[in-house]
Length: 378
Figure 1 (cartoon, one colour):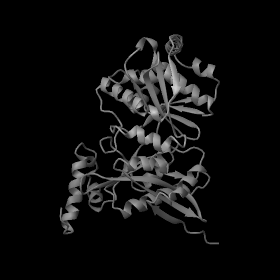
Figure 2 (figure 1 turned 90 degrees about the vertical axis):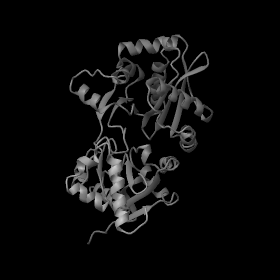
Figure 3 (figure 1 turned 180 degrees about the vertical axis):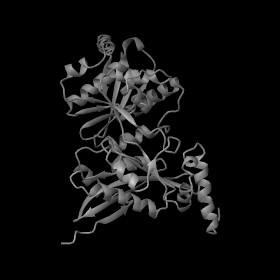
Figure 4 (figure 1 turned 45 degrees about the vertical axis):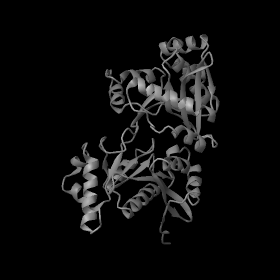
């Protein structure tokens, strides 16, 4: 019998994409960033979600949600955030899901496409390289994508989880609890409190807030709150909100997406208590893993090699490491151009140029040349 040829589907319709969410619901654990509700959120801020998948026997066997956006007036980038997703029990589904992504990128002549694989997606590297993808330089947008994390296994009992933390961390937690730090689960009325605390943290560190939009947490709550995909935890001292965490929830994992602190009541250790209470809540509500999400990859490499890191950001890494857990390096990010002229530049050795700080300008100029050669007005 001749095997059934796969069908490839591309859709930017949210109603049709319900089929994609059903497929995700059948997988053991899926990143929030591949859900249609995340696509709705990102759609508010310049990204356009499209869902692509491969079908066999009337069933989806793999695919991805792809976000696209203009980069300047004449170039478009694509981004697969923690995907593609495939059926681990189907040996062909990985190749088919990647092919579905490439078919879409080719149909749109994407200037370049970036793939940030899922946490457990190491096996995709060989497939992507065989399909002419390259490791993404950090300077190419999107930047700041997590490439290492710290994971706490929530299977042991709470006493064992606490015992695995540093002595200083345990002392801080107990002192904070004695001094009356209270942590509560927030709701939609706490949106502005969470945003304000996060922005205050960024201001003290001299960095731009991310996300930078004032209404981002409100939209996040409105979209993910009703489904239980997001929670706010607020640490208070004498009824005053002092620190907050915004966590994303998947089937088995709590992800520490954003945190904020006013800078007040340091003597009460509100941040240590906040993290501990978040870990406790995750454990008590059936989650098996607590994910810090962001560890600098150079720090992770150094620590795993037995070296001590000391730089302007090492205090943040040390703070997180005090909670115990396991450092994990995440799969490399890959990119490929589906734009004819950019592909020609790459074949001529232009990959370094595309990875430079001037990459955005170069990509836009190349796209402009193509428009001009086609006789289109600029």
